[in-house]
Image 1 (spheres, rainbow, N blue to C red):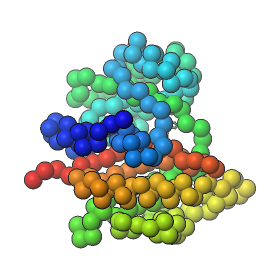
Image 2 (tube, protein in one colour; image 1 turned 45 degrees about the vertical axis):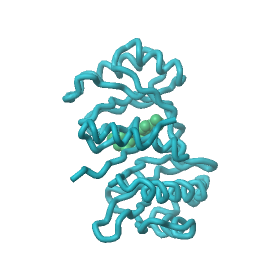
Image 3 (cartoon, rainbow, N blue to C red; image 1 turned 135 degrees about the vertical axis):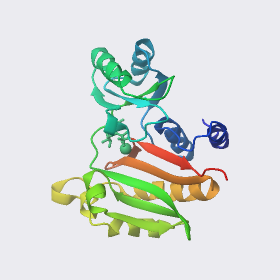
Image 4 (cartoon, rainbow, N blue to C red; image 1 turned 180 degrees about the vertical axis):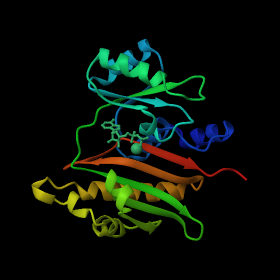
Length: 232
Ligand code: ADP
Ligand code: MG
C-alpha cells in the first residue's frame, strides 16, 4: 500500500511534477482501479529476471525514468517477452535509450490479455471550471478523431454513462460486428473513482489512464500518468 500524500510530497521535494507510470499505478491501485501486476527494479539482468520470475511470463518491460513520459516513442516499451532470452535482449535495448537518469529502473509487468477495446480515462484542469473528466476510445481513434467526452467533476454514475455512450466509437464497446460487449459499469466505476480522487487531492493537475483495457467482465489500466500542480 502506498501513502499517496507522502508520495506527492516526495515528488515535490525532488522538484518533479510528473509521477512515473509505476508510481501512478501504485496510486490507482490504492484508490481501487485495477492495474497490471508490476515490479520496479534496477536496470540490470539479475534484477529484471528475478522480477519476471515473480510475475510469470509473458511479461512487458518498460524503462522507467523521469525524463521519458511517452515511452513507446523512444522504444521504451517491450511487449510480450516470452522467456529469459527475450527479456535479456529487451533489457539491452532499453539500456541503449538516451536518458539523463543516472539510475534507470525497469518496470516488469504482466502482459495483459488483448482487450475488446482500449479506452482512455483522464482528467485535465480547466482554468475556469476546475477538474474536468475525460473519456475516449484509445489507440488511433482518440488521436485522429479527438473522439472524447468531458464532464466537470464531481460526476454522477448517470453522467459517466452519458460520457461513455456519447462518443462516436461507442459501438466498439457495445458488441460491434459480433465482438463481445465491454463491461460499461466497470468503466463507470473507474470514472467515479477518478472524480472523487481529483477532488480529494487538489494537487493533481492532470491524469491519464491511457490505455485502459476493457473486457467483458473487467477493466485493467496498463499505462497511467499523474501530473501534479507546480508550487508557486
Ligand atoms: P506510452 O508511454 O508510449 O503511452 P504504454 O505504456 O501505453 O506507453 O505502452 C504502449 C502500448 O503498449 C499500450 O497502448 C498498450 O497497447 C501496450 N501495452 C503497454 N503495457 C502493456 C501490458 N502490460 N500488457 C499488454 N499491453 C501493454
Ligand atoms: Mg500509454
